[in-house]
Image (cartoon, rainbow, N blue to C red; front, side):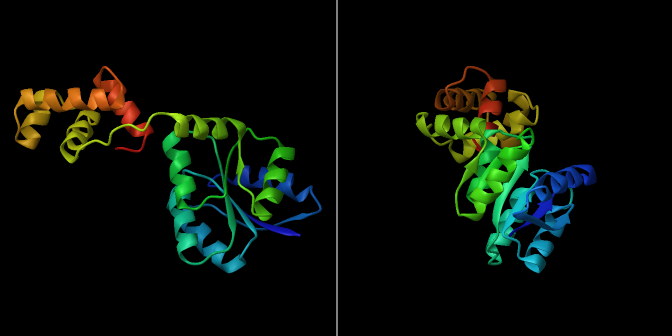
Length: 205
């Protein structure tokens, strides 16, 4: 019998997942949690085999909860179950210790198979997530941004003009433009919006 903890801030989602999982005679839903903080407490109390973890919740996000459970010696295998599949979200979850990453449009059969797979020690990924990870690994490694380039781009991401960025960092507008051109080259983009979007997607901001 595989014992599962369901973590999601929406009661109706938890109820639906409970029904899907308990229809299988090999799975028992040991408990539920509605936030990242509660997930950490419940994980240590219940010691489930598998935790289905929502990604974005009030009271602490899923990635933070995963990291805390791992840090406290939890043995549970954790699967992120979310509607979000950005490169940054996927990488953060895996780096925190997630054993899998599924999307909420996953079928009942796929979800049950993933729970059994995770309990066996396997890594379980939605097909689209696996594709993103493979594409990311095959992509050329971009040059890392310097501290100043990151500072400039972070202010651009907040909507500041080049002149405003210059004043905030006590550098000239021309120097700001030079830093941005270097950022564009490193990220393989041609404008400010694409630079911010790409940097966020790669976890650089």
